Length: 241
Image: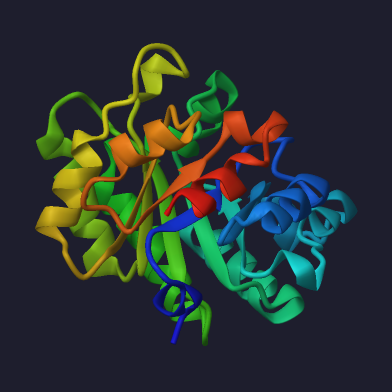
């Protein structure tokens, strides 16, 4: 059984955040009650080249488990090689693909949320990684491609067929960045359409009330920016259930 099949729902985790979701914060969030923590995103190219900084970014303490290592890239073969290295060298509880980073640098280099525009190629990346892994579950983190929910469902359909075990959905479009309100309706519809897929929602959880308001039919949530300065949010939510 994978870690998310063993944990009592709802799952409450620390979201992957670039230059933020590092070991000290992950440990603080786990201590406060987070069910799972994600690493910050790590370049697949850097992993296969053995770049010291990338290797250091994947190190973690056993107290952080379950921990998911998030990788990014746009070359299916490179991504698969990187995932295999992550599995064999670090033995995380999961590997996650970043299909959600909205920053301009990511768009120019062809990774992150721009990959939502090409569901077929993204599915090939998933398929390659899935074949390379022996025992580690594979998940993806996305933004909603557009306001049109059909675009989200199209992407998830191909991703599920390609072999993902879990998906996290940040309810903002790439162009929104972090502006405006997150739209959780896409995540709810994904869970309704794909009941066997573990679905986590993300965006704008800042309190126990906002957690209860947004959870809906989902398997859990990821908390990002608010947890950076308030890891106690996890214990507050846990104690409220």
